[in-house]
Image (cartoon, rainbow, N blue to C red):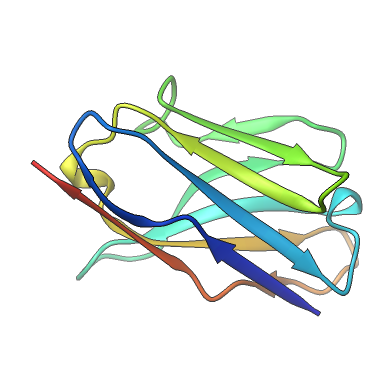
Length: 115
């Protein structure tokens, strides 16, 4: 069982990136899925989650700019990030969770936004 995050990189402020979290060895559509980030010197924080039923939740800091979604045919969860700011710079990780289920974490993908 694995989660593989990808899509990070260097982008200028105001730009966009799309992160992808691929689930290997399990069906992600039956789990709640989330994106979290950790900036240097700071604690990890929630970015966005999507339930198995499709309900979404966002941190106030990213509302209106980020969108979490699923592509169940490809067994991936996506995070579309628009209007990126320098303060969005962080290591972004994905997580799979659910009641009575084990929690899985991906290895993270680095997003760097230059101002």
